[in-house]
Picture (cartoon, rainbow, N blue to C red):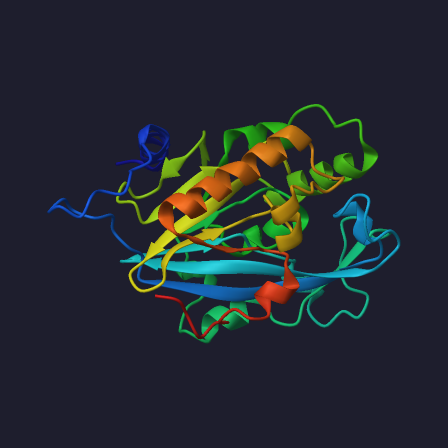
Length: 292
């Protein structure tokens, strides 16, 4: 099958793939599992005004965030969820920023060096799954030129449409276009997608932070279901109290997406890994350790 035909086929297949419900334990085949989930250190950041992420609270108080990526092994397939702060940032005391007056990112380890710890290189990654297009989430997409980049169609259209009126959001969108570039293999999906049609890797539409934000739910044999939040929530306390960051593009959608994730946590007895919650992230296993 020619590359263009394959891309068309995959787009149709992904778009058509329904979310598979958990099957009852009455002899029916249960959903499949991924083999391993690795947490990758993709940077950390310091913001000078926490109230941007907790409106009405923490005015003028600095706040530190983590940036996380995840590597998923599914049979012969290797996937990465988000790509973090650009590797060029490594060792730069000034850090890197999309909005330098607000937040600055630092990087202690590159994705490439961490993959090497488990005998992999960027060329081994077949899929890059994008939670959304902010620079601290897509900073290293260029490391994976031959991978299939999977993102929501609404997100792609948003960063390629008329500039947003909010200057801060416009800055983020402009950088997103630059970092994303023109992937060789780009798969645009709409809504919830069961990526392999076996219940093991599911993209969950969670708009609000950006128009095409999504989260990821993976199924592991020992750990069970894990939801990788993207930026549907930044802090556990925000999740508990429906606190929506000021830079989110739609407050109502943000709250609805948090409700959606709460329902999934209850239905699947899932654990949520919150991308930017440094307190939680510091307690997670870090590559080369893994969840299975």
